[in-house]
Image (tube, rainbow, N blue to C red):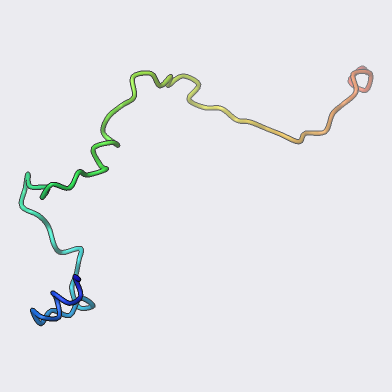
Amino acid sequence: MIEATASSLGIDLNQVDWNSIKPPPGEDFGIISDDEDLRVEDPEFDQGFGNIVLVDNLPQVRKRSLRS
């Protein structure tokens, strides 16, 4: 449908720079942006333990080998 409409208007969709098309400020044309989800902080999220290093598959050392 879009291709047919563009063709009837003489628009080559391969030549359109889609990144240059910006809606007017404050206008979303009824499309909800998923960027809004990124701005909302979850109040239940615990932000403790900022730096955690998890190490797995280390060799096991017997207790008696640690004695000098």
